[in-house]
Length: 278
Ligand SMILES: Cc1ncc(C[n+]2csc(CCOP(=O)(O)OP(=O)(O)O)c2C)c(N)n1
Ligand code: SF4
Ligand SMILES: [Mg+2]
Image (cartoon, rainbow, N blue to C red; front, side, top):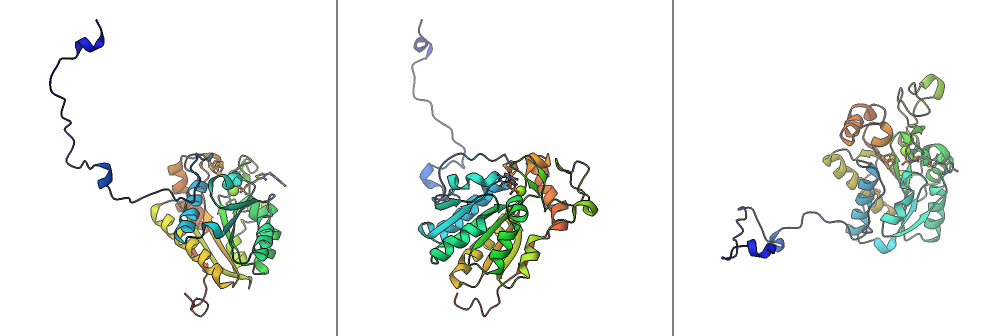
């Protein structure tokens, strides 16, 4: 006997949908993936901040309608493949050299919106000299600085930004400040240079923080039209894999521990006179 012979003849079954059901075209679109992002899976660990920040930058580029005018410089670190995800012109830089590469791009093409995307190992260790000099020269670029307090890609070694007492693969007993020095507060350091125009530290570990970070990225890209100096948006990122935490624990760790060393908020903002063309 075939399976069809078990089906009794009768009317088509009526689908009793719940009252809240709407046809597809009746829904209001409240979220979409920006068209400026490549439609592909990312390699990041679950809960990693990099993917979210890529999306925020690309949302801003889409909303400002500057996809054709934006050039990003990718680092070496977990976000080395940023150029595979952001659908804009991108250049890979050797470890730590993103600000030097961005300087060349921006000086050749001053009308482009140029940004670097760098981790704390990339920017604050091997690349500290390039970064400091670029900001001191007031290069008209945006530096997106992803501070997750470790070398994520190479399995969680201590970075210049590792918290006092924090356990990493190269500080298994916790960072001893007397021996290794204190964490470098890159944003505060660069804010004192006359070449920096806008410096802020944000995070993406809760919805309000995500909104503030997006606003900071919007401001920083807009300010490039003024040609007044370097903008630095530091973002406290989470690295659940190397922190050996769940994504939820990592988000909590930022609020409870990271902000003690790296307080969130604006560090240097332009004055009203500088902004009067907007
Ligand atoms: C010249 C050079 N030195 C060292 C390395 C090894 N290396 C690759 S990524 C990395 C650290 C990356 O850490 P970070 O910039 O904080 O990025 P994250 O992975 O945490 O996002 C290091 C030391 C390299 N690739 N090239
Ligand atoms: S190792 Fe850390 S920084 Fe790298 S992808 Fe995983 S969570 Fe992100
Ligand atoms: Mg890092």
